[in-house]
Image (cartoon, rainbow, N blue to C red; front, side):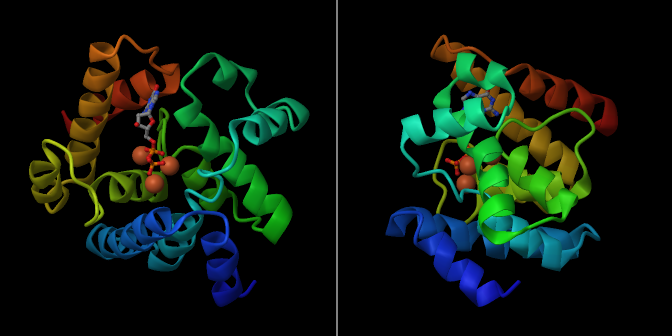
Length: 187
Ligand code: DGI
Ligand code: FE
Ligand code: FE
Ligand code: FE
């Protein structure tokens, strides 16, 4: 597996803006891995690939979910959740990525889940705080990320859940479980 080839293949899946975001997530994930005693190489690979399928057409993602028997429950929830599971499948089949830790970090980067690994936490948090992100509270999140991976990620999920409630959207159960689990971890 050649990282330069993977970079070009990933870049080819998405518009320039999403690619810039991806590069920001890569840098941030490597920094978080170094700070929190994670694996910087796995963090780089998972971050590079985390939004691989983000720009795919809805119908294409839906077909993968059905045909590859990814969790059908995804189809009942926000389409924003789909690219994570579809992306993990895509990089495995298209590029032979077979490191389950890396695949899980891609698969759960949006929703989170109970019992997140360090790599999953790193990629998910990097996705929230990479330098290109701009949303209310992101600066505080960046500061918190310097002190505690779990505290920062908990705050990130809280803000996502608050927005979903405000917009009267469904909350994917794994996100609730991720949040409850993080509360137990920080207390
Ligand atoms: O792909 P990105 O835009 O870089 O970021 P992401 O993969 O974290 O997608 C986040 C979007 O998903 C965000 O706009 C909120 C939306 N979303 C919809 N339903 C849920 C959800 N996020 C979580 N964590 N849980 C949900 O139930
Ligand atoms: Fe994403
Ligand atoms: Fe995320
Ligand atoms: Fe992302």
